Length: 188
Picture: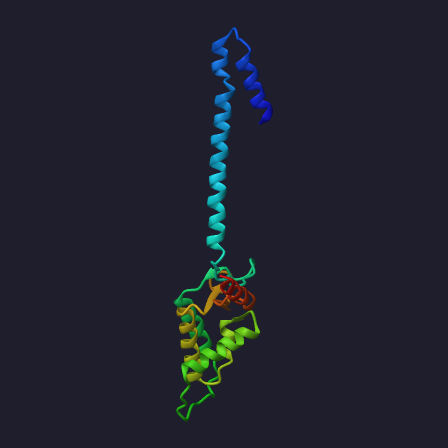
């Protein structure tokens, strides 16, 4: 910068033969252009720093963990119904229900979420085969549909007509992030 200013001063003091050449290569204009460009970058830098501060309080929901070779197709309700029908027909015929048993759907939802807390994923047919009675099987199926509707779980499969896997969706912010958020709020 200093050398450019000295060069400009020297040219201004010395007489020049070719004024057209000076107008094309006018160092003053070049310096002005550089300063304007510098101002633009400085303003953009301020804008980006404000964006960083603004977005520092924004947290995204973490995605559920899926192997890239594992279960990438979304499952439709028809796929779940077909899998349910296969499991229902594969139940032994000697299961006879004599008493009417009432199973709350909330209980099955809690059971499914507890299973998914212990394991990262579980197959849909495995969940259905854990049920002892047809009523429990139907309530479990309804619980899975309810959890999918409420976006607590996700059903995926690797290819058409293959095994359906159930994954839990984690909506909550991790405890470390909660503590950091509380500390930030206290500082403000």
